[in-house]
Length: 448
Image 1: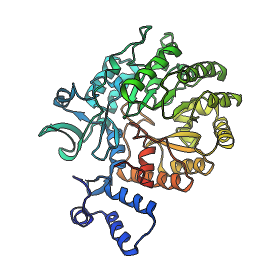
Image 2: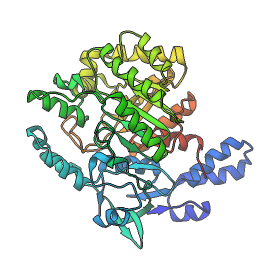
Image 3: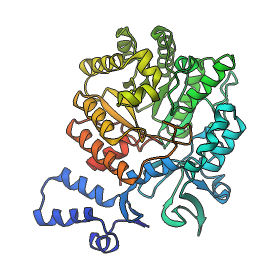
């Protein structure tokens, strides 16, 4: 059941949620702080949901949907084919918006598994034994002309989709298709998720949760040539199209981990230069995800060319688990090198300019909290990215955490962001990362 907050008294009667008493706290104490009142009003106006007797908000619901996937009725695709950015291909990175505007990754489990079956190798076939873990209680259906999100067949919210786009039908002047090379995320992002191949994966050291890394590793074992990096001119053409036609303001640049920092730098500098020459330019941020280089002057060059923030992502804090889940990052690069580069960025460019993804759901909350706190205390933005188990098993499992885990994650990152003044990129949100959503929850930074 979804409860749209209007009258707090009615809310208190309809949902057993102690947070509703915040409203009465405002009245009783006659709070004068404008900013504090905005924060509390935002909390009240976030949509509340009750699942299994748990009162949650859109942050936890987003985590649950991402981690469990969703069954989408074909009528939803038919109804929205001419009005929404909604595709049956998993390569198109679908999303939907909850009634309060929260952006949520839409992984249609039926189409996703069908896509996997079409590219099955022996490694993928072994995933069949995990199919039981991938059953989802979430579904999307049409009801009375609305797209409705359901949990175990009970309606919990009405959702909408980004406006229709021709993005995935485009090719660059050289004939390079947009689909498979870039994705639109939410309402303001174009993301390049693997611009160059992962050499760690090809050497047999892929991250367990990474589907692309698994493909690189499988291809290398078969003696296949790894894909070439996307030419900078094609990247610039894709970004320009997204700016002009899809309202994009932010760019994510990501590639595989490499043994040679200078070889990776050659790609990155050309990409940043190509984006910098665009007219009109992206109005938001350019996020850069890199392998930490030994030569720190490369970091200076990236910022000079237009990078807004730079990540050397640790992914997993618990070192025992990290050796198992992210073997290349631990055994080849080494954690010390990641931390050295991140701390260098903070010292020279300021708080929040360095960030590191932490995969929410693959390690115990205790070690996740330890890592996020260590980073935040040093001015490094910890970026929570929700584990999507439908890619590959991690630690021999595809089972996601429960509601309580995600609640604790939300409260942890909310506290860290406000205490250390670490703000994720201003936007309406990304599909899988919940950093901005938690910032909105923590600070009341929202739009009417």
